[in-house]
Image 1 (tube, rainbow, N blue to C red):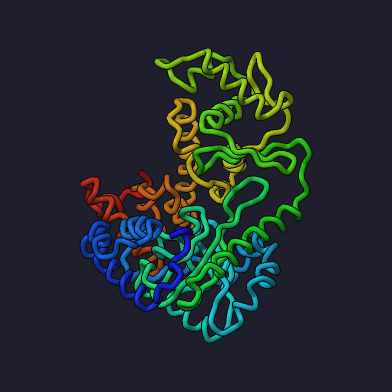
Image 2 (image 1 turned 180 degrees about the horizontal axis):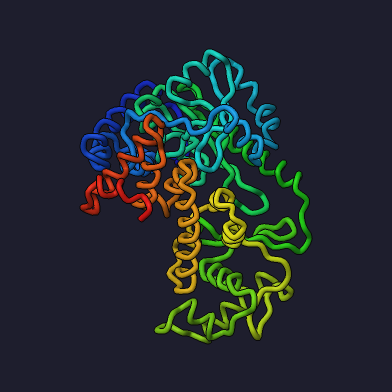
Length: 433
């Protein structure tokens, strides 16, 4: 297939494909990925990988929980950055949303639906699966679906009918694209169109892609560029991205590590200190380090990188430092919202590894201290929190009986307890550990 993010190849019968993928889905639930592959060798990799992630966390009969309602929902979405581009979404997708066959939806970076709009009849059908404002549609809570999977892989994608992990969603087809903060690169959420089988075409995917890019362009236009100010995005990505004077510069892995280490030491570092942070005691290569720094200076320009000691000049803002600053101000919710994932997760440089653990550890401690179910749920949805026994324990303890997220938290505590051979009751009795 030319485009792996498209659900159907040209000329394929949708009804036949629904049956084929449905058989693969049942084989997957019964026997895992290999059984699904034997049933249907054309199963898309993006779908197979999403099924694996989903199966580790939820049952295929699960209905996504509703986390925000009434005043809490109104307040949250009124303050969300995507509220500024809601008129654009309605302008570009409003006609589709009112045609009696489709819905337009916008979610935040945690998969919480902020707006769901369309024909009243279609909205009523969607309510049966909790596809409503305030519901949590990321993969850990809803399984494979276009907005949740687009957030998980940070790429636009179509999910067609039986490709959905949850059986209750398999009558729908959807296409979604992620939206980023144009200044920092931080993931803000996703825009989605949902409807019937006829959405499985290149036009629907192109439409949400174009809408997401238009939203980013409007957000950029609304925020004037600060001359000379450099922003660095290094959370949740293996290669850092710089933005300066409207330009985007993507660094290689080694230069990303050097930049993060320099950002962590604004007072400056000697070549030996950088070498130890980059290579460790056993692999100190002064010549190689000088060459890397020379190349980095050519990329950044002589006005940004100084030497003797090596340090950054001017105003440089970095997403991982923003998380720390928000925590220092006593704002764990803001810090969690700014946290896009672990710092340069693919790096094994000693200095980066230490800093990554520090950022994650400080954020985790602050979230646990709040005992806030919404923040705990958001933390467990991150890569760092997905296997965090204490966080799932705290979420189960903080969620009152009857709360939609409590069964999911209890199930995850059970699963992790079995994996680590720990009694579930013991975990629930010690929420502070």
